[in-house]
Structures are given as structure tokens and as C-alpha cells.
Amino acid sequence: MPILEYECGKCGKKFEVLKNTSEVIGDITECMHCGGEAKKLLSAFAHKVSGGSINESVDMTIGREAEDRWSKYHEKQAKRRKKLQDIPVDQPKTKDGKFMPIMALGNKKEKTQRRDYASALQEHRTDRKKKGQGQFDGPGVF
Image 1: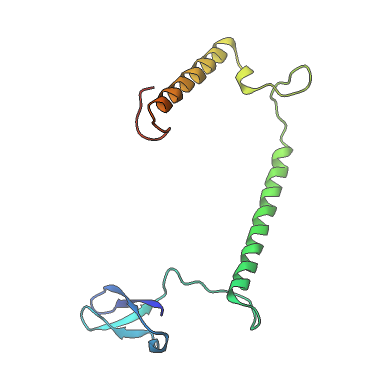
Image 2: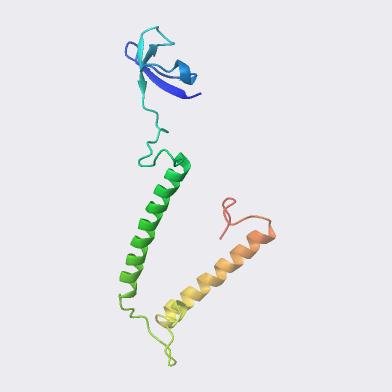
């Protein structure tokens, strides 16, 4: 039994009606508020399935369409990753050719600030854990 949505032309109110499939004949019904003429609206959850055949179920058609959409998405992501791989990285390397970690970059003052911030953050998280508070359970003193 579908739930149909109607809008009254007289009072302008919208309402829903649960109707048996055999009762759904036209697009017009009587308004339950004022008795005026109400027209059927296209529901937001309605979806038209394209394609398919007599031998194919709706689930199979929707599944095939979803699979096509996902494959297009993965193709776009692969192209994006390829572009990102082509961008040169100016991050310094160690003597053995490996990239230096971010914590090692910058001057002495910046390195000290990052280290202090990281240790303060770790202490803060440890205190919250001891008190039985999660990371996002509410405000806490930093």
C-alpha cells in the first residue's frame, strides 16, 4: 500500500494518504482539511529505474546501475591519484634517500614548539582517559 502525498488547490495544505493499490485511480482526491480538490505530488522518495527487461528484477537493474556508478567513481579516483603522483615533492630526504618526517622540518624554535604541543596534547589525552572522559565528551582544561 503506497503512501501518496497530495496538495490542496483551495487551502494549500499538504497531506499524505495511505491507499490500497486498487484505490489509486487518478491524480486528484478530496482534501481532508477543507474538502477541496487536491492534486497528487511526486514523492521525494520516488525513484525511476531506467533500463531493465521483463526477465530482470528491479533489484538487478538497480544493482547494475549502482555498479556502473561505482566504476565511474573509481576511474575518476584513479585519474586523480595519477595526477597527484606526478607532482614533485620538495620535502627533504635523509642520507639514505628516505623522506624526513614533518617533525624534523623547520628551524630549532619550530621543532621545539611542535614537540611541546605534542607532549601537552598527549598529557591532556591521558588526563581525560584517567577521568573516564572520551575525546569529544565535552569541554576540558587543556
